[in-house]
Length: 390
Image (cartoon, rainbow, N blue to C red; front, side):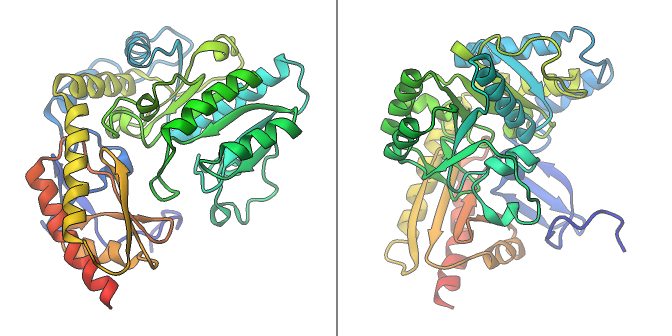
């Protein structure tokens, strides 16, 4: 009997080694990783430059507390702000912590404007985390059930529906911010229209709201640009990051710009482990490798290649609803629930995921080659066809 709390429906496999886009289990079987730890292993597994940088840092200093200055934080914050035109960064350990910081910041901003009960507009089918506040902001009743009473102060609207946001603006004077994912990962790889994001930016400016973008899953080069909102040419007031930022090391970040700058002061927020020297070295190295190896362009071109390859092999197959996504954040929507495909793929040496019940989610590492991508397509398409015909 395991003493690990039973919070995951784990698949019957344990991995002991990885290299690039490949993993090996305890029996020596090799698997092609089309999930990269759910958008975490940006540089794949055992990347030599990341391994060397972390090994060197471990030999120097892993943790010292935010009571003191942390040079790695300054370097990583400078790098992130240079890539985003944001102005401040708070470092945490995870995406939900980054989103907690954003929610707290929005409420603090509201109170500074003398709004007694600040409210945040959030989206249907959103996913922002599993802490009580981020769970409450999430638009999925399955993960909320049993944890009531939920945190109040969230107003939910349909995704990609600006009219609904405008209606809230007309009837709710307590709103201080909008929190939205440019691409919903858990929600089924659903992408905001560029025009929606641009108009939402304008509306937030008109209402003096904070535009807060959750890029925990879609940031750090996954869509072919550093950050997904850059496809729309806008700048948010708050942006949250995690997952791919550390290529496997736990790290989160809440970035601010414009009217969100200097909202927090000393004592308003904190983290024991957030931004420790080891995590910051992982972030710095990840960003440098993406830049030096031109992985943004690679993610864009490889994503287009994969989408076209799937479209070609699945053309005319009844039950394939849509193939969509951006860069290396891809979804294949089927006409029926397809969770069984995860284990079928595993048995065939492929790591995939299913979200929103009927969407195959693919999040390959940014270092995956075109030949490996072709193997992923060639291995998965027959499984999809057989599943739909069964």
